[in-house]
Length: 154
Image (cartoon, rainbow, N blue to C red; front, side, top):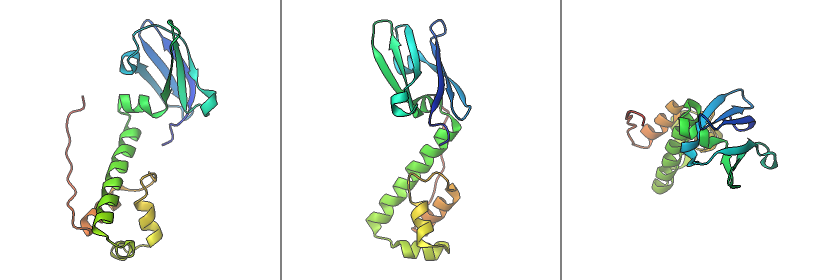
């Protein structure tokens, strides 16, 4: 995901939101309520101790909180975040089935007409530079049907 670091964090106590700017240029508003914040914020900014991968905020009562880079993306259901979340879940599920059924990666590679190294890349849950269509192919090869279901977002 390209949105991993914060460049700037500002807050608006009247609107009860954080305005977040990622180093990628993405700008997001994150409501206090989604972080269970009820008091006013007196200070906020990128946390340099962790390389700006999260931001901190200090409330008027002195409480300090920290928010990792992906939490606001999850809250607003940003498309990049949702895509990676789906890829992660499908990949982990395929890994579990392949391990349980003891399916050799060499056989998967042969049936996909690719290398074992490429199969390993496809089954790496931290690799988000892959196509969902290739995961659907793997599911089909191991005898599983891939079903889509859409529901209205909350």
